[in-house]
Length: 280
Image (tube, rainbow, N blue to C red):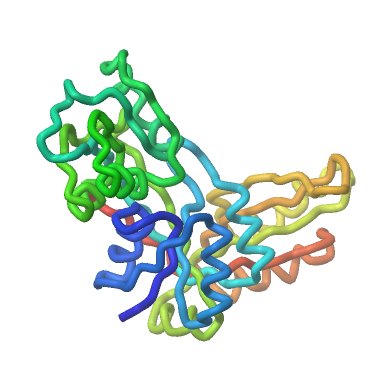
C-alpha cells in the first residue's frame, strides 16, 4: 500500500484527493503543517506527498510553491478535487442546538452564505477541517459543529446536519503529488507528460518578462497560470511561478533552453501529466 503524507487528519480533503488520484486505498500519514510533509519524506524517502496548490475560490497557495522549490522534490502529478462541505456534530444534536462552528479559515470562507443563516452561532477557526471533527468527537463537545467532508464526519462518528453547504458549487482544489525522483518515476510510468510547473527570475530590466513569454509563444507553449512572488532581500524584484501545457515534450524542453539567456534563474518543479478532475 502506498504511504502518502498529507496536511490534516484522517478524512481531510488531501487524503480524499490522494485516494482519487491513485484510484486505490492508501496509507495516510497525517501532518499538522505543509512543512511537516517534507519532514516525513526526509525520514521515509519512499513516502509520497500531496499538497493543495490552488483553489477556484481562494486562489493560489504561494507559500506551497516555495516549499516545493526549497525542498527540491519533483512534482509527479496533479488532481483537481471537488470540495463539498457538510456541517457535522455529535449524534443526537440538531442544527438548533449548535452554538459554535469550527473549521479551517478557508472552509469557513467558502460557507459564508450558510453561516449567515445561523446568526447566533460563534464561528471559530481551526487548523484543519477533519481535525475539527475529530476534536469535537474526542471531547464530546455539545453545541459545537464542524464544517468538514462527509468522510471525516463518518470516520469520527458525527451526525451530518447539512450537506453541500459551500456557497459556490464549482469549488475545486488543485492538489500536487510529489516525492523523491525514483518515486516520481514509478508514479509516472507509462504516462504522457504534457504539463510543467517552473519558477524563474528575470533581470530588473524593462520588458524582461514579455521577452520570456514571447519565446514560449513561439514554441507553442500554453501558459495556464503565472504568479509573481517577491524575492526576499531584493527590493522590487520578483520570481515567477508558471504552469505550462504542451503537446510536444521535446519542443517544450527546447523552449526552456531558449529562455535561459533571458533569465537569471530557472527551476523546473516538475514535468507531469495533466490531472483529472473529480465529478463529486
